[in-house]
Image 1: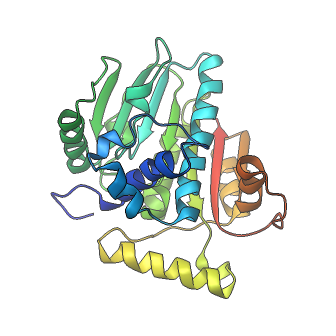
Image 2: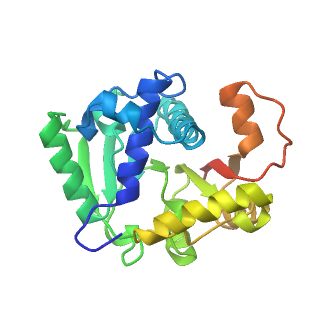
Length: 267
């Protein structure tokens, strides 16, 4: 992202979430603030709706994360950290009593979000706090203070980080037993069928052009080894086939179909 400017991919992800509420009527993921926080007329969002495949993937990743979060809260977790929060609205929909939410993001994107909240009249609960961090130049250890196990929501961020930036953040999360994290990652386009590879390379070129290039890819066995080495003992990794079965009742994809993954890991 450009210095002094909010993340443009954060805006794009918010549009996908909003369009899902209007077109699929939130069938996968309900977010009452998704449309409101953008301040864009609903008919304009529908007319300029982003493509369905990405729209429903983004809806599924939030559903996956918030289902896992609900389970963590039921086990006693009382801190939620949203890394690279963008225009995520969980903190303002949070219905869990006694659960505090810490949003962590680049200071420029965070300032922009606060402006959007004020402009659209979305109240900031007393349970919400903000920490400004550039993941490539600062560490969570020096910025984020927690008083026990936490649930980390880390969506739409990992592909844009360098490997060093990713591992530094994951190392922080792994330091405390009981911490849990949900994130998404992408497999390399080099391992995709030709048509899929071309589409991904075109999308990668678009985000690179706006200053937010994809930098890091993982294969499932690679990320599994990295997590095991950091002490994560429980890992759930859903690729395209598993996501299709869970959220869309489709069971026709080969189990090893490459693509975007959603992953949950518990330290």
